[in-house]
Length: 438
Ligand SMILES: Cc1cc2nc3c(=O)[nH]c(=O)nc-3n(C[C@H](O)[C@H](O)[C@H](O)COP(=O)(O)OP(=O)(O)OC[C@H]3O[C@@H](n4cnc5c(N)ncnc54)[C@H](O)[C@@H]3O)c2cc1C
Image (tube, rainbow, N blue to C red; front, top):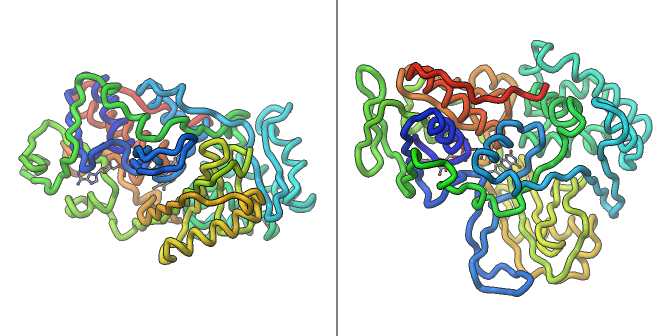
């Protein structure tokens, strides 16, 4: 197997359960791919220390509707390290806070009370949002053109006022799909609202790892049948008459089956012969801004920040370590690091006035230019399935045809699907994928 990100680990876990011997060749010295952490020295803490601390490349969030990811965490034995939050907060510039949480009504009306109480949209805007929400169950997976139009097209069709788009739909969707509303396929927008918000009354609950991401991936939890070869990048793939013969990774490795769990740009380089429309795939960036203050600046665990460049805030350590996330962050890509920090501090002061009295002890900016693929209209049908034109070569990775945007859930689903495809090819069919909640 090529790659030890979530797709690779999910594939390996299933194949080992089915009795296969698995070797993972991973370029880096650790697991987790894009959902991982890095050691950082001199991070200010409760007792300041020069010891390196694991810091996530960026906050990773899941919802309870991510059923395969949750199953994967169960396989790794780390379900208890995910903490679920039942309340979402939205902060306006100036500091006014609104919250959404489940109320007394059954799904899909479970947000009714808290939705009516939101202060950042007026009654007319709420009526319009309610009307659009009402259209979602009858359109998602039923209306044929949702993959061809953008989410913004759909919102305009639904006659959504500008404030409702910018303050309600935008903060939820741009972070969930990592793309602008005028560039994301409406199918993914409706999917997020249906599966994540409406279909079940607990599906919106937000799971946040209580430990650094890297600590979730203990190679030992994959069992004795899985061997991980760290710092072993695959540099070439040899093709023969009957399929793939071997891969080059320092030595030539032969196997019965090969599964690529690499991002699309790597697969294109290694195996351009695969019949994939590579030109259809493009990246969308995410910027994470990590700020360590000398004192707590908020009690909220997290919040969407409205009307500004920074979009979400996560409180990582008693309010002293704040992680800010900007999805589809193209406007920050070229901006110098210090300018990003200055912008973030300026904007954060509008939401959390306590930051004005606090001293910034350290700041760190992570610009992930290749964070995810851009889930634009027309792409879904071009995403390759797990089987390929080579009978012993399979594809996994968040960019393959999972039906989900680029997410940890999408990566795990791709791994489960690839494991099913390998098991079918080996004539020991198994079923691993858990269907969507609705
Ligand atoms: C900043 C950021 C924030 C995100 N936030 C969220 C979030 O909140 N929620 C969410 O669900 N998703 C989020 N995502 C998306 C999520 O991280 C990805 O969709 C998912 O981790 C992709 O997993 P993967 O296994 O498909 O690919 P990857 O994680 O990219 O794994 C590929 C692996 O292959 C290895 N590799 C590459 N080339 C080679 C080679 N030649 N040989 C061997 N190994 C190689 C890489 O080192 C890597 O380990 C975020 C992503 C980023 C970047």
